[in-house]
Length: 206
Image (tube, rainbow, N blue to C red; front, side):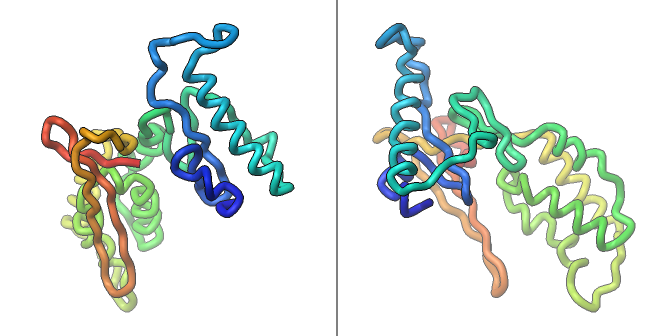
């Protein structure tokens, strides 16, 4: 599918595995009306959608009717609620993490971290903060859930309760710097994309 939409990716649409997200304007143009009193931002979205569907049809492919959702105010994708210019965590998933009690065994600790990983973009230095829990996953290490691990769990809960919003990248000429942070080892790597905002803070971006 990437080859089919190669000329449209980033400007008109984005790919997520086998899913296609058609881009829409980040503004509603103050509800400006155009042809047949259709809102301008709706028309722009339909035009982008039309480009995507033409490429798919020319390649003799199809899209799923059941899975398709068009011009929605917000969508749930994986464990995020996606809106026109931002995305946030799903509330019930965050509550599940916050209500988690101490871990009795390795399986429970792995399950807790796996759930937190969905939202690690909201937590600066997530891997470093949770390193004491990750250390319990090493081979030939006895599972001992001590005060230190519990304190880390409690800290992660507090950080997730703040629920920072991830914004889309601002490509305007007067936009602030875009920053890429990386975290790697011999076996794993990770990264986080951020952008400075006018108050001097850095914001996570989609």
